[in-house]
Length: 188
Image (cartoon, rainbow, N blue to C red; front, side, top):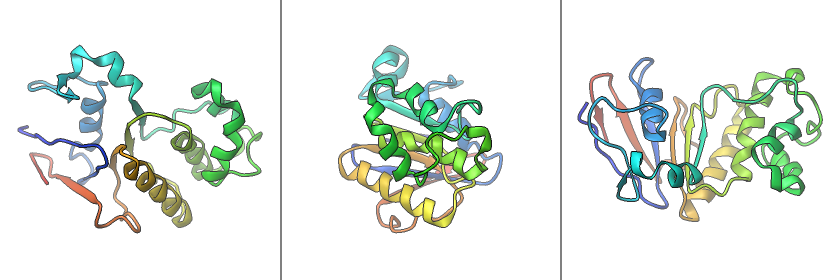
């Protein structure tokens, strides 16, 4: 209730808070997956409800669940989301730490590798706004550093990132704005 903040080009916001504080609910509201009880979410100065199509073209949402198909390979899962980028898929998977696993069915991968399949989209998308719910779940220290570098590169190029995580962001402490949810309110 009473939450108001903006995210400008080149910014990233880390949403923090305990379990049940409303982090995922906030992200669902920001992405248009849920409607607020009151107030409004805006995209480029317009109410989201009026610009939903253009907003979704500018959005990459990766939820807490990886949203991948276990029967498909890592490459096939990425191809589903980025059908015109076939030549770039192996490099995206390599950047996500999955070199050599491109053609392995996702069901045979570890939880961390499955998460990396979903996050490999970060190396393919042209979306300006990335909204990521607990992107580091099941990811090892090297993977967290790799993903943090990718997010830093995206914001350095004018992109925006909003993410939830309980983990510190290596090398990004000075550039990340934190929004702390306390269950009944928030503070920047």
